[in-house]
Image 1: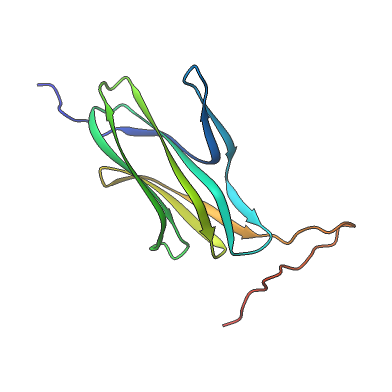
Image 2: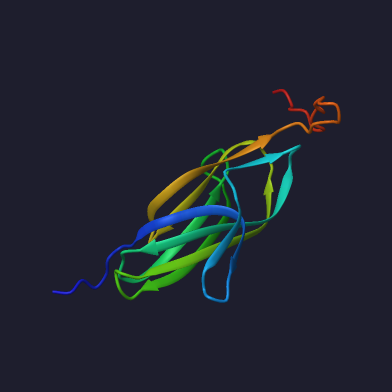
Length: 149
């Protein structure tokens, strides 16, 4: 009996500044991000891309990518896309584009990748406020100092 559906494996998921596709079909990832370092908050990222490649599956699927705030419950951005794998030996590449993403607070944010409501991967994106260096090696204090509770 032939399987009618096999849930795919997530081969890779990378957060980057841009994704471009060459004329031969290959992808170029620009500015792969491990963290976001900013001089002050809030800050708006012009564009963030999540590059996902699926493989070893068979059937029709729905991918959901979420950017989660440090409270681990609030969804800052979400992307949903349908895709198909016609053979277990093929792959599907999806790129989620999040424009004008505002980071309001420092801390660990999360990227979550789901397929058909099954969590496949959750990885951290740390947003760090780092004072700017002045000439002469002195640090400049952040313009928005932390508020005390």
